Length: 124
Image (cartoon, rainbow, N blue to C red):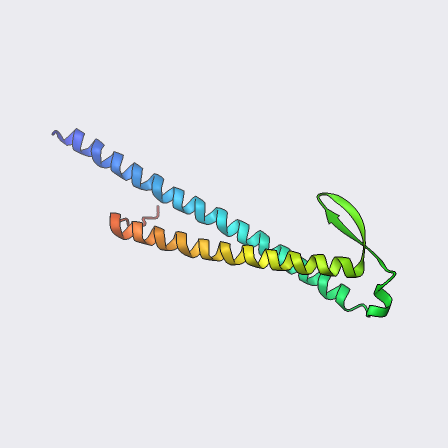
């Protein structure tokens, strides 16, 4: 095998490793973005829930409240919205937990792959 062939082989292996590394990075970025979005939604839901729960129950019964459902504002009562927010918060918390474990899993998988392939990060 000539020097040129060896060099081309090394370049090919390096490119494959770079592509795999980039794929791991993209996956991590995507999951972290989703996690950030869900965290923001949880915070927003908690603010609304806290505000609505602060209304005394005697004043809630006839009070209108609007909730966005699929891009449409729907009229509900305050108590209905509080129940819906609680359900949404539980669902979002479950999703957040799954995404957090996904981030950990992908990082471990990436670290394991890097050790196995003896990959070193080189910044330019």
